[in-house]
Length: 190
Image 1 (cartoon, helix red, strand yellow):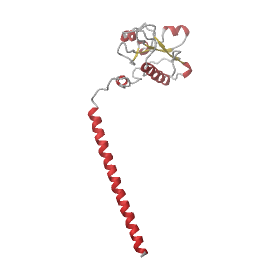
Image 2 (cartoon, rainbow, N blue to C red):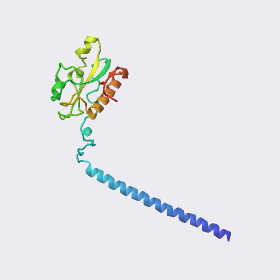
Image 3 (spheres, rainbow, N blue to C red):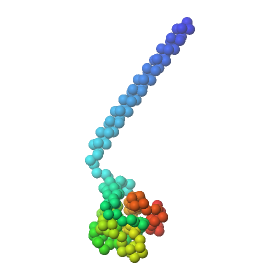
Image 4 (cartoon, helix red, strand yellow):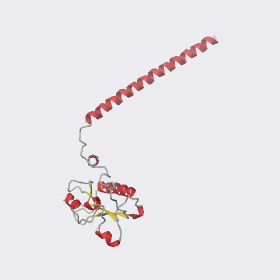
C-alpha cells in the first residue's frame, strides 16, 4: 500500500512538472510572438520623421555629434583654458560669424532664430589653431566658445547649454584642460 502511494506521488510530481513545462513553453512562445510583432511595427515606423512637440527629440536627431569639428588638427596648440560666453547682439548670419577671420571665437553654437539651434561650428581660428588676439595680449591661449543669442533673449536655450557642456567636456579631455581653467557664464547652473 505504501509503495502504491509513493508511486502515485511520483506520477503526480511528473504530471505537475510536465504541466509547468507546457506553461513555460506557452509563455516563451507568446513572448517571441509579441516581440516579433513589436519589431515589425518599429521597422515600419523607422522611416517616419520624428514629431515636433514640447518634449520631442527632433532637434537632437538632426545635430551632428559633438566632436566632428573638435578633433585635433595636425598642428595643435597647447591650450590653457576654455571660456563659454554669450555674444553681445543677435547674430542671424551664423555662417558669416564662423567664417570671419577677424572674429574672436573658436566655436559658435547656433540659435533658433537662424534655424541652427544647437549646431556647433568651428571657426577659422580653430581650424588654424590660432589663439584670439585678446588672449595673446595676456600671454594665454584660451579656447573661446560663443553662444549665439536669439533676438531679444539674453538667455541660452537648454539645447544650447547642453551642447556647450558636451563641447567643453570633449575639448577638456582632448587637450588636458583642468576643470579649474574652464569658465562659464555666471548665471549657469551645470
